[in-house]
Length: 161
Image (tube, rainbow, N blue to C red; front, side, top):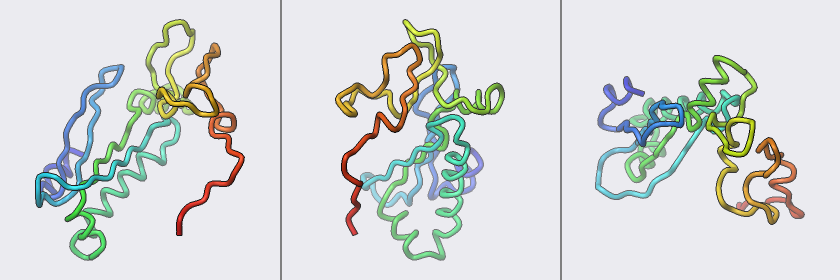
Protein backbone atom coordinates (compact mmCIF):
# COMPACT_ATOMS: atom_id res chain seq x y z
CA UNK A 1 0.00 0.00 0.00
CA UNK A 2 2.85 2.35 0.85
CA UNK A 3 4.57 1.50 -2.43
CA UNK A 4 1.41 2.19 -4.47
CA UNK A 5 0.86 5.44 -2.62
CA UNK A 6 4.40 6.53 -3.54
CA UNK A 7 4.50 5.25 -7.13
CA UNK A 8 0.98 6.17 -8.27
CA UNK A 9 0.42 9.43 -6.41
CA UNK A 10 -1.81 10.78 -9.19
CA UNK A 11 -4.34 7.98 -8.70
CA UNK A 12 -3.75 6.63 -5.17
CA UNK A 13 -4.00 8.28 -1.77
CA UNK A 14 -3.43 6.13 1.32
CA UNK A 15 -4.64 7.23 4.73
CA UNK A 16 -5.39 5.79 8.15
CA UNK A 17 -8.83 5.88 9.76
CA UNK A 18 -7.52 4.91 13.19
CA UNK A 19 -6.35 1.80 15.00
CA UNK A 20 -7.85 -1.62 15.60
CA UNK A 21 -8.72 -3.06 19.01
CA UNK A 22 -5.17 -4.48 19.27
CA UNK A 23 -3.57 -1.26 18.00
CA UNK A 24 -2.92 -2.07 14.34
CA UNK A 25 -3.37 0.76 11.82
CA UNK A 26 -6.53 0.72 9.70
CA UNK A 27 -5.56 1.86 6.21
CA UNK A 28 -7.73 2.95 3.29
CA UNK A 29 -6.66 3.36 -0.32
CA UNK A 30 -8.51 6.07 -2.20
CA UNK A 31 -8.31 5.39 -5.95
CA UNK A 32 -9.31 7.90 -8.58
CA UNK A 33 -8.01 10.84 -10.53
CA UNK A 34 -8.14 14.03 -8.50
CA UNK A 35 -10.30 15.97 -10.92
CA UNK A 36 -12.60 17.74 -8.48
CA UNK A 37 -13.15 17.93 -4.74
CA UNK A 38 -16.42 15.99 -4.59
CA UNK A 39 -17.13 12.90 -6.65
CA UNK A 40 -19.41 9.92 -6.14
CA UNK A 41 -17.73 7.09 -4.33
CA UNK A 42 -17.61 3.31 -4.19
CA UNK A 43 -16.67 1.56 -0.92
CA UNK A 44 -14.95 -1.85 -1.08
CA UNK A 45 -13.86 -3.64 2.07
CA UNK A 46 -12.19 -7.02 2.16
CA UNK A 47 -11.02 -9.29 4.93
CA UNK A 48 -14.01 -8.83 7.22
CA UNK A 49 -13.82 -12.53 8.11
CA UNK A 50 -10.30 -13.31 9.25
CA UNK A 51 -10.03 -16.82 7.80
CA UNK A 52 -11.27 -15.89 4.34
CA UNK A 53 -7.88 -14.94 2.93
CA UNK A 54 -9.23 -14.57 -0.60
CA UNK A 55 -10.90 -11.28 0.38
CA UNK A 56 -7.72 -9.23 0.90
CA UNK A 57 -6.24 -10.93 -2.18
CA UNK A 58 -9.23 -9.72 -4.22
CA UNK A 59 -8.79 -6.14 -3.01
CA UNK A 60 -5.11 -6.26 -3.95
CA UNK A 61 -6.00 -7.66 -7.37
CA UNK A 62 -8.63 -4.96 -7.96
CA UNK A 63 -6.21 -2.16 -7.09
CA UNK A 64 -3.55 -3.69 -9.36
CA UNK A 65 -6.01 -4.07 -12.24
CA UNK A 66 -7.36 -0.54 -11.83
CA UNK A 67 -3.87 0.96 -11.91
CA UNK A 68 -2.55 -1.25 -14.73
CA UNK A 69 -5.54 -0.74 -17.01
CA UNK A 70 -6.21 2.95 -16.31
CA UNK A 71 -4.47 4.10 -19.50
CA UNK A 72 -5.52 1.22 -21.79
CA UNK A 73 -9.13 0.49 -20.77
CA UNK A 74 -11.64 3.27 -21.54
CA UNK A 75 -14.16 1.90 -19.03
CA UNK A 76 -11.64 1.83 -16.18
CA UNK A 77 -10.37 5.29 -17.11
CA UNK A 78 -13.92 6.66 -17.08
CA UNK A 79 -14.64 5.09 -13.67
CA UNK A 80 -11.38 6.38 -12.16
CA UNK A 81 -12.00 9.86 -13.61
CA UNK A 82 -15.59 10.13 -12.38
CA UNK A 83 -15.56 8.14 -9.13
CA UNK A 84 -13.45 7.63 -6.06
CA UNK A 85 -12.93 4.03 -4.90
CA UNK A 86 -12.33 3.77 -1.17
CA UNK A 87 -10.74 0.37 -0.57
CA UNK A 88 -10.02 -1.19 2.81
CA UNK A 89 -7.97 -4.29 1.97
CA UNK A 90 -8.14 -5.80 5.48
CA UNK A 91 -11.18 -4.74 7.51
CA UNK A 92 -10.52 -7.17 10.37
CA UNK A 93 -6.76 -6.69 10.79
CA UNK A 94 -6.54 -8.27 14.26
CA UNK A 95 -8.48 -11.39 13.31
CA UNK A 96 -6.57 -11.67 10.03
CA UNK A 97 -3.24 -11.56 11.86
CA UNK A 98 -4.50 -14.12 14.39
CA UNK A 99 -5.60 -16.46 11.59
CA UNK A 100 -2.06 -16.39 10.18
CA UNK A 101 -0.25 -16.81 13.50
CA UNK A 102 -2.49 -18.85 15.85
CA UNK A 103 -5.69 -20.33 14.44
CA UNK A 104 -6.14 -20.74 10.67
CA UNK A 105 -9.94 -21.01 11.08
CA UNK A 106 -10.41 -17.89 13.25
CA UNK A 107 -13.24 -15.77 11.79
CA UNK A 108 -14.14 -13.03 14.24
CA UNK A 109 -12.48 -9.88 15.54
CA UNK A 110 -10.23 -10.10 18.61
CA UNK A 111 -12.09 -7.70 20.91
CA UNK A 112 -13.13 -8.72 24.40
CA UNK A 113 -16.83 -9.17 25.14
CA UNK A 114 -18.07 -8.21 28.58
CA UNK A 115 -20.29 -10.97 29.92
CA UNK A 116 -18.94 -13.58 27.48
CA UNK A 117 -16.02 -15.95 27.88
CA UNK A 118 -15.16 -15.95 24.18
CA UNK A 119 -13.37 -13.24 22.24
CA UNK A 120 -14.45 -11.32 19.19
CA UNK A 121 -17.58 -10.66 17.21
CA UNK A 122 -18.59 -11.51 13.69
CA UNK A 123 -17.79 -8.07 12.29
CA UNK A 124 -20.38 -7.99 9.51
CA UNK A 125 -23.20 -8.84 11.93
CA UNK A 126 -22.27 -6.54 14.79
CA UNK A 127 -24.60 -3.71 13.81
CA UNK A 128 -27.82 -2.65 15.51
CA UNK A 129 -30.12 -3.80 12.72
CA UNK A 130 -32.83 -6.42 12.68
CA UNK A 131 -32.44 -9.68 10.78
CA UNK A 132 -35.46 -11.96 11.14
CA UNK A 133 -36.72 -9.90 14.12
CA UNK A 134 -33.48 -10.25 16.10
CA UNK A 135 -30.50 -7.99 16.61
CA UNK A 136 -27.52 -8.68 14.39
CA UNK A 137 -25.83 -11.04 16.87
CA UNK A 138 -26.98 -13.91 19.07
CA UNK A 139 -26.95 -13.43 22.81
CA UNK A 140 -25.79 -16.99 23.50
CA UNK A 141 -22.56 -17.77 25.35
CA UNK A 142 -20.76 -17.62 22.00
CA UNK A 143 -21.75 -14.71 19.71
CA UNK A 144 -21.33 -16.72 16.47
CA UNK A 145 -24.35 -16.30 14.23
CA UNK A 146 -25.29 -18.89 11.66
CA UNK A 147 -25.92 -17.61 8.16
CA UNK A 148 -28.96 -19.83 7.73
CA UNK A 149 -30.87 -18.30 10.64
CA UNK A 150 -29.60 -14.78 10.09
CA UNK A 151 -30.27 -14.30 6.39
CA UNK A 152 -33.42 -16.41 6.06
CA UNK A 153 -35.79 -15.40 3.28
CA UNK A 154 -39.02 -16.87 1.92
CA UNK A 155 -38.42 -15.53 -1.60
CA UNK A 156 -35.37 -15.84 -3.84
CA UNK A 157 -33.29 -12.71 -4.25
CA UNK A 158 -34.00 -11.08 -7.59
CA UNK A 159 -31.58 -8.69 -9.23
CA UNK A 160 -32.58 -6.19 -11.93
CA UNK A 161 -31.35 -6.95 -15.44
